[in-house]
Amino acid sequence: MYDTSIFDPSLMQEAVKQAESHWKYLHTIPERAFEEKNTTEYLKKVCSRYDLKTIDTGMDTGLVCYLDTGADETVALRTDIDAVPTEHGMLHLCGHDAHMSTMLGAVHYLCGARDDLRCNVLFIFQPAEEGTHGAREMLDHGLLDRIPQRPVRIFGIHNRPEADCGDVIVHKGHLMSEKSVFRIHLKGKAGHGSLPHKCVDPIVAAGSLICSVQTIISRNVDPFQPAICTFNSVTAGMSESSAPETALLTGYIRSFDHDTHERMVSRLRTLAEDTASAYECTCDTEIIHMVPAVFNSEDMYRIALRAAEAAAGKEHIKDSAPSLASEDFAVWGTEIPSFFYWVGSGTPGRKNAPWHDPDFRMDEHYMETAVPVLAASALI
Image (tube, rainbow, N blue to C red; front, side, top):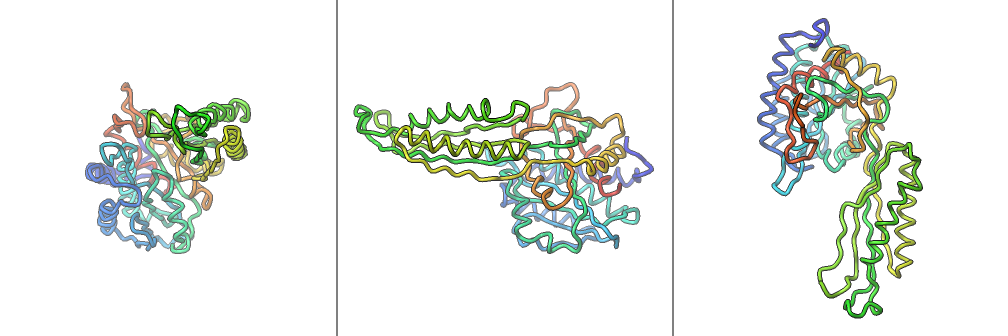
């Protein structure tokens, strides 16, 4: 149970109920990254009920609101708003519907408790977290120049199905990975399969490259540094009797350590070019850096720990191994001191499906912990 010396119990109960109501509706309108128009309209409608200043972001989707208490400092809270594309259409299989609802619950509480606040609060409803583009887009549109006061801290939360509902994971150090994506185009010479000496088969080069790249992790990365360099798709050929002209390989690189990341990028590029040359192909390698790693500093950890303890009770504060998944909340951390929580969303005693799994579900009591955690981050 949260600390009643910090929270007004009746106001928090209202905020949680509000969040649960929003959750039921937002779950029914999942939308693709940068296309969250119905979602944005709903968020605007709800936030217009409160004494908040709406910030013009210069973008079609997403919402930023400012609670001005006249304080000397501003604390920012951020949530994601997009859904996951699947073969069955858009679905909220990562819990962003719950994250938005948590933020709306925090809006309700903090606006009601504004006399107790020692800071102004910036509420950021960010589009396009899936694919890790949204945070950078908001910053590139000059958000930090559009707001009344630059935040001194920013907090975000994400549900964690592997953790029990009611628990809060407060982790110091790296929490989620740096990510780059790559596309490797191999070009050979098409021809009939019965005349291999007249062809330059990029499929053979692709097969060799796939095997060679496995050595990046086994021979070029410190064994004590978690890292991934993997292919996620290989596309080549449409005929059973002919060698194709091109092969396309895509994948990503993930790590916590930036120097390790740069080493993997360099090795991937070299292996792609040298393997292509060895098999008489040409190669075009595109490597795009997406996001840095999510890192919770010692100073931010101390603040977040106090907030989480006030919100959930010391007995519910947990630690966890970090994840090699990525989160574009990390981009905010390049501009503002940041902290990212995981809030347990798994039902105790049940096998809970992970993020993006078709069976992904969140415990119905999630808001009872998530709303106080986010609100406490602006209260502490």
